[in-house]
View 1 (cartoon, rainbow, N blue to C red):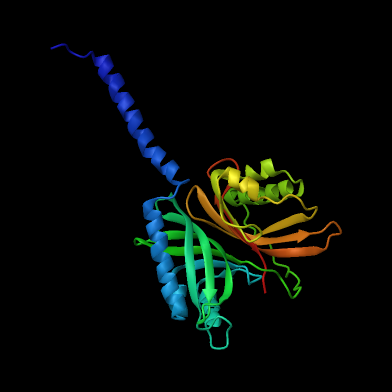
View 2 (tube, rainbow, N blue to C red):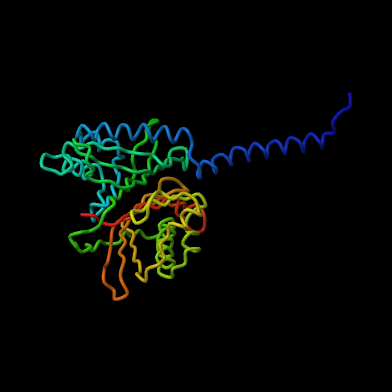
Length: 304
């Protein structure tokens, strides 16, 4: 029997070790960009729990599916709803007798779900809230971030935005920008938000598209559908207006070494500087590189 030289054995061993490292790393990277069966199942389970609580008007059960420091960024609110107490109050008000949504039921659809790390999941889809006659009371899109806690998804940030318009001409409230000195991840997000506004104002769709990861998600109330991937995102960008965009950061939370969520306010102005539209955004960022990139944008116009 011919013996294999020791050098050859070492080469094979090193190659094998390299392949093991590569195979361990690659699925995780791929998982950041693609839906998985487990993520879809988690999101469907979460949506079913949310629907059960909503349809029964159970404000406490709805609040309990958030993390204690959870955030709600909603199209029908000018300000973010932060923390378990404020979240419980918001659902209590929504389902109180006399509320337009009292006794309503909700239909939730799932468009995309994916893991960003072992315990961070994002999902996006649509919602439709109906009365007892199955007439639509409110509808829109959502793009949310979750943490896995003891095997169950808990909402870190809900970013849900209605279709419709600010029919009562309500003015945007002035909100203080979030600051935290010495936080390099937050600095990256500030820079990303500034670039987004600049590219929008310059009508530079190529550069604006590059602010997203290759398989990014864009869920905004100003365009139909949920857009996934660079091609769809670029097509969804509306650059035919002379209006300008201003955006500020109102809050931020780091979910892992590579992922953070942030939320804020945006205002669109015409050429004379008048506010023509405004609303909130709640986005998920990849902060692993020198510059932050959008994993998911979820934003909408304030609708009263």
